[in-house]
Length: 282
Length: 282
Image (cartoon, rainbow over all chains, first blue to last red; front, side):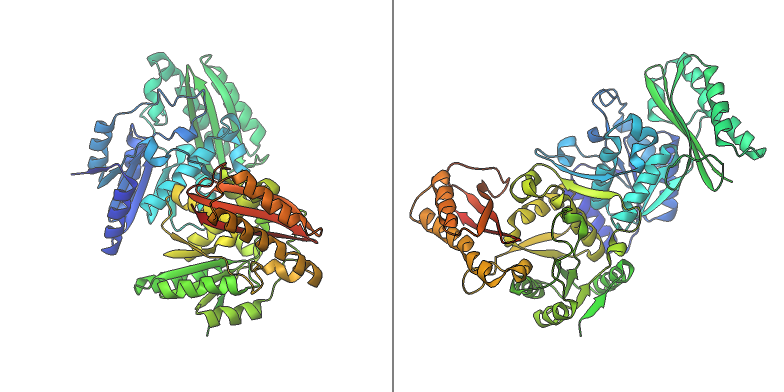
């Protein structure tokens, strides 16, 4: 039976005793409302570690003032069932006051790569992410932590934080999980109307088109970007925030497809902001 | 024989193997040019832990552009001897490139209490301190870390960082060590001319006067502050930066002496910036 832990003190105590028994700890940080993307992370974690902890915490510091913190979907009971099925032993589910007590004022920030892509549209977002992940890594002290590549920039930012702060945790990036029709799994998908959900398919379709162009030998980033733009323009309900073709290590835009390339996009479909991407080795 | 470790990788390996043997680790982070203040920290650390690590790293990110990074005194051989005499087993002495490799961009910052006292005169200083101490805590992973109360604000800031980021290290604040004539020990004292060194005595003398006033029952912070100001004004070579009477927990200025009170001052004597303080329980 999976256990729900709500205090930092208790979570630390459990980890300490498990480690004293020589157990390895895998960690899957989430904001809850789990989907198959999350449960695939739990399954990876379970394969590589003795104990798996899933955190469920809708982190207020990573939402902007006009963003969807209040309507972010929540369903702890369902999350509990899905985490258990996927193999987790513990859910860490603290309150906001437990994580950010009165007078809280300490932040961890990665500069530079956080100004690009989603960081450009969401000032302060990544500072919230790195701060909460840093705290969670101190609390859960995992050997390995699992992140989905749908948030590719988040993976790059957290890898940089861990490396630069000399933290002892291995970051394991895991592939995007998609619905049968190609839509990248996201907790926010539930907020899409049926019509908007249909329109949203253009996002993954445009990325598939880009993939085909590259596989056919096109190395011109500008041409590929334009093809994605034109494809998405077919759906009037989709408002592009950005479409970027960047080097995955530093998120700098590139002209020629070469090395490990991230093609990332963000768009609003109705009131819902969605992101999607592909990573190609060329 | 004390060992000097220069790479993060080797330092982490040593700590891991010592902890696997059940040893406790005490840590004394310094910028080197050790004096009796530092060696008293090493002795405390040695009494409470199996292994003591002293770090010696003049941290560029905590110096402002017009500050004394270039002339900050350095003498590794002497530091090595003093650390060994005091009971340390290891010196961690990385290069700047080892701690801040090319493209480094991750910072840890405590807001609020870092704007006061020395933080007001040295913008960015405490961000450099919390960043390097956070990194050092990840590398040395000590059970206990020892800090001198001469940098009382630094102690308060680091305690807040450790608490708010849920770090597993006990911060042990240790009393100021003074020369026979009352001057608080500082690596910067060596940069004082003989005449300025004499003038600098007014700092500790003014604090002793404040202490006497409080012990005689005076609880008016304004009166005590004025008495310190007047005392220091006797020395024309001393230019006060600030004299503050604050609550030690939040560094907020107070009107009435009550609870745990920090009386802190900073002043330039010649070209050398000195700080001193007393903490009183009232």
